[in-house]
Length: 478
Image 1 (cartoon, rainbow, N blue to C red):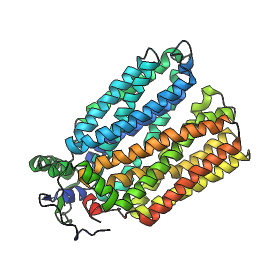
Image 2 (image 1 turned 180 degrees about the vertical axis):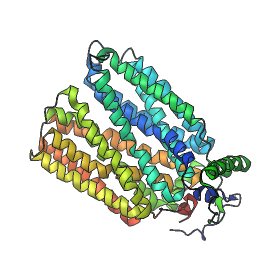
Image 3 (image 1 turned 90 degrees about the horizontal axis):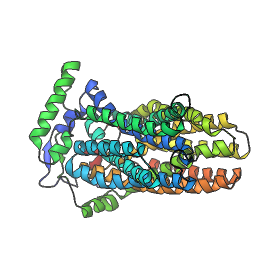
């Protein structure tokens, strides 16, 4: 790769000590507030996906929306399509207009769309609302991953990023619990319960909106856009709050660095991704596509496997989501610190490789009939303890290895490709395999997913970037 010395900053780049001042800050209550306010987006995504999956059969009832199975599936595809479009649209805008504007706007889009979903009179309106809900969620990924990486100290960036991305499964568990309660005839019942579920999602989003107003714009982004005085004011307020909690701050050890002018042309973005950082792009693409296929293959057909092969009643499927969600939450939380201490390449390769082996073994056991509904759920929980950390590390990789001026757009591009490929292909393929009624056919599909993540892990082990404990500016100059 080209060295930093051989690639001097552009003549109009901004030289500043802002990155060093942000990275030297001790972890504080201020960091906790920012992480919770921004990271809740993944909880909302998990809530949406699981809630829709849990109420799919309810929406087919004549006293609700009277949808067909195909229409339920189409609504799910439109949600994914909206997420892809939202990532591409808002990712570009987050680089041009700022992180804060976009993570406020995207949350408003999500809240309005999910509230409208609760008021749906029929399929067309419901499907349109699902698209716009996905639009907001997709936009959240780019703006929030950028903001978090630019505000969190480098020494803990890995564990924080993984924990936030893993919080999707807190939302999944919440969605499963909501569906059990709201659809219970003794509480609200299926006719109105599904509407209340979406309405509660909108209320939660509006509450988060109030909290997010206090999250500042990224000082890194402001400085790169020539708004140095505003960046200094924000950073001074952050330092004052952290100093009040911890006392005197550590000295800035990093040399002042150059922030390149922001809002590059699409031609420049293509040159960076396809030429200057070609290996990084290959690694990022492999990680994102393989984890998307891996996850969507299992999660979007989770209920089908339980009901068709293990004969679990539809009303009890949500109960099996809890152990699955628990494994997915604990993986990033417990393994995340190792991504900062042991290193990115080693941990990405290890988690991808072991999760692939675990899925292959689970697929074999399923094919041979060694698993019942509970042991199947527990086996997947163990596999996804590793796979959740692996998938979260894919988002971490994309968000930290590309330059600031195109960070949000890079996140959105790889998210869109990964989500588009895995989101559309995997559920459809596995739906066909499950429809065949053949355990061997389903196990063969699991084997394909396992091979994909193992291959991606090997590529990352060989060509990944040692980004642990390095500033974002240092990583982009490697």
